[in-house]
Picture 1: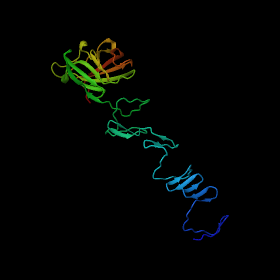
Picture 2 (picture 1 turned 45 degrees about the vertical axis):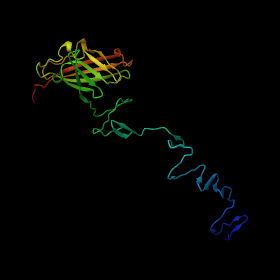
Picture 3 (picture 1 turned 90 degrees about the vertical axis):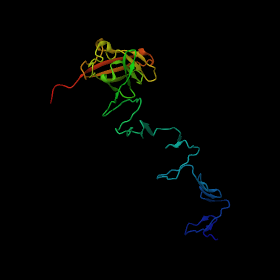
Picture 4 (picture 1 turned 90 degrees about the horizontal axis):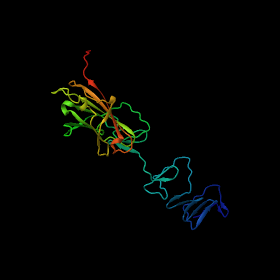
Length: 285
């Protein structure tokens, strides 16, 4: 094969050169930067050879598209950051709360049918709640031989408002509160909605000072065996229920824990107040 327009000083720039093939025995140098040799193609400090293009730095003003990018020295547990460094930290991208999973950035909205979520303890610098609902649960009752009447047990994992029917479930001897958090100086509140007896003897449950609500309490914070105590009441009296058949009384409790040790009874103070004698009014419309 003949090659024309080639002289010892270079290649003529006029016209064109067509070459079917070139076999390089050692190297061909073009200018001062580009070299074609048996090991590949060198542009400055870059090499183009059988395994790919090896480049020191690439500056692109457009978009670089590739099937994959491999970071030299990187591992499968790392990802490449925008500044070129690698990171193996696990970042939260989604959360499962109450059986629902949602993306984390911005907000967590689960799909439990009400647009809400269930969780244990949520700590935040600020909380904005629209259309808040409090769960109403039926208090658990069981017989207590020491008081010859029932224990009304309120479990905070089930709700913060409870109902108890005197006629159906018996006169209250002890009110028990369980599974409430005691992790710092804080207050947790419960409300019990009592409905007075409607059968014989009618309207006689917890209507006297000695049987008043809050006289005998049992506290069982999360992770603690529990202990007996009494509640402080306004004017040093007690909270009694209405003596009228079928009346409804709301009795609220505030449990103050001072943060000095969840297993010590003296680190808790309970306050109780009542608002009752609710019944249908006599005014008709």
